[in-house]
Amino acid sequence: MESKTATATATATGQTAMAILLGVSVAHLLNDAMQTVVPAMFPILQGNLKLTFTQIGWVAFTLNVTASVLQPLIGVYTDRRPLPMLLPIGMVFSLLGMIAMAFAPSLGFLLLAAALIGVGSSVLHPESSRVAHLAARKGKGLAQSIFQVGGNTGQALAPLMVAYILSPQGQLGFLWFTILAVIGIVVQARVGKWYRAQLQAQGERKRAAAGTSETPRFSRRFIGYAMTILVLLLFSKFVYLAAMTGYYAFYYMETYGRTLKEAQLALFALQFAGMAGTFLGGPLADRFGRKNIIWFSILGTAPFALLLPYVGPTMAIVLSAVIGLILMSGFSVIIVYAQEMLPGHVGTIAGLFFGVSFGLAGLGSVAIGSFIDGDGVERVIQLCALLPLLGLLAMFLPRDRTFMKGQRT
Image (cartoon, rainbow, N blue to C red; front, top):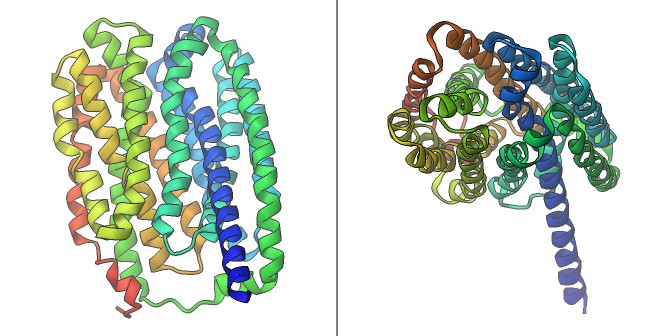
């Protein structure tokens, strides 16, 4: 009888955990849809407000760097003192950002709106990643992939929303995304309630102390070496993605003489396939090793990225899908890899890596926009295709089984 009761309890607990994982995944979807729709709308914003490519780059920079600066700080703080209330509050900032985007009359207002959206994103990622880690059982890679696939789904849907919802309505179409923000507030409030209950059950003070007092299993030199390689890999991934999501639509329209709606299909293919890649990356890493999947996700993209600027419009959509599938399979794996290297610092690692990725994308957007103003979009897209070759650096990463065994290096 007791065995049946224990089994039933375990089943119910597992079902609740999966529901929470799906909840943070949906919240991630809504957040990233709102964030990704901003660069997807650059052609319309450029026409409405007469912006240069460099000014467009500054909008992307503000969006990403706001999140980049805040996310590590939030991650470090909430490792010591988790704050479930931050989850719905982050969506409130995104709501305000969407309203500001819809009515922005100048570059200055666009920058303010981008900053508000960036703040919302900076709150979501470290705390929601911690919730995913908390709800996970043995499959940390799978749990992180479920969380991440929500974000990639939102990124995939954004170009379609621009093509079929925002384009006909122009800038005011941003108001439709206030609906997503309101849904996000409701979802995050429910997730936050579960999160708060888990913290109370474990003892918040005990949990915070455990998260910050654990003795590192590896030397600072070893950790610094591995982190440097991971950051370089993130550089290649996110600067290339910044080129694709922010400027490839311009390249597609200019090179092939196609409309914005048709150009958005290439971005949709990139993001939709990336959603599948993200979902597959975690379970594959659980089975074949984190390092192997990280290596494949970056370097495996290179042949297709190098070929992309030299094919026709239809093949470009196909290659965009292949690139998204491979390239986006590695980010959740990188996070889990680093979390296993530094256990007890889940929020710090999530905040750091999300922050670094957003910061690199923001800086990359400014640089790419400036180069396009000088050299043209075709030349710059061709040069950016070289970035995935930095995936060769993944060969120098320590084997993740080192972390699993707890060997000191």
